[in-house]
Image (tube, rainbow, N blue to C red; front, side, top):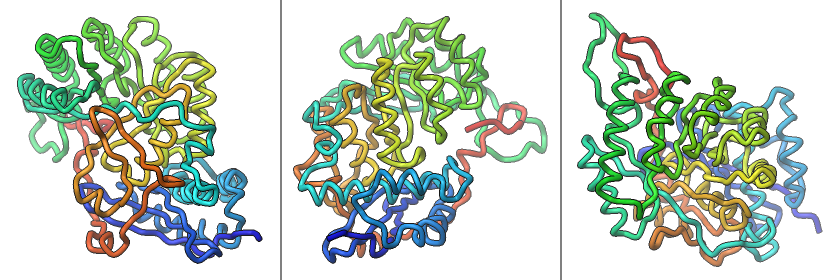
Length: 399
């Protein structure tokens, strides 16, 4: 008997700082359903509309076991394709169909992909502070908890250093000084490394805020501190600069969280210009394309480090982990440090112990959602401030 998609429901909730979008695919089997992450927190209304008005009519009545075909056809059904709104909408259904396939088979998704190669996934967590000393204290706390990989930032993305020299009448915004950032971050990383030694892997995220030539200089300067990787040194529009960056620095490079088109990651993989892939699973369209990219990158010796911030839903984190357990080229997994509320709202959310993210034994993605509780934390309409970034003279800059 063919099991089909009976309904497609969108669940929106904001239990923490981020608006989350979850897709629930209900099937012709009354008790069988799947969950997927479609979170694009800055444009959640657009994703919800894309799902309810466009993807749902396309999905109803389709065979739930033909998830590969669904992804291929859904990606081209609108003719125009590979944008963040559409990709997130498709991802929600794609992940839910993988969840259903796992439940039908009585297996976790990693077993459907080919079987696990590890029992848990190494994670990295985020240490921040306003001074090098505060950052160092945060790193030491994480080390005491058993973490072996810690990303170090100071003053948030772009840093808080530099004098406020904006012109009179300059508009409000999240101001940062790229040159002050370079000086301050190098001092911070040097301080942290001197105090904590080499027993912990340090990571740093430029967050695409430097001009390419300055990013290259920063990568050369930071090389001495032996980072596990330097993240997002360049914006997607400047990926051709990776060749010059690679030629001048041996610091490992991670890139990809803003990518949504295969033509963005393919040349970096084929040219062996990066070391870690950082794509956001829902941004690229779901588990299906992520699986394909992992296998492609493995042929070139490039590892994964899937994007895993707080605006990836717990469903998305569970999907990340299933990939991590299976991939032959797994590198590291970003972890957002879930709160107790997250575990109550999303039963089955993976747990971190001694620096490793562990799965449970449930089939599919191994995670559920308490819809009644989710409804008590509705999404909110906000105009993001941190993405309204500006240079010292007030010029708009990429966030």
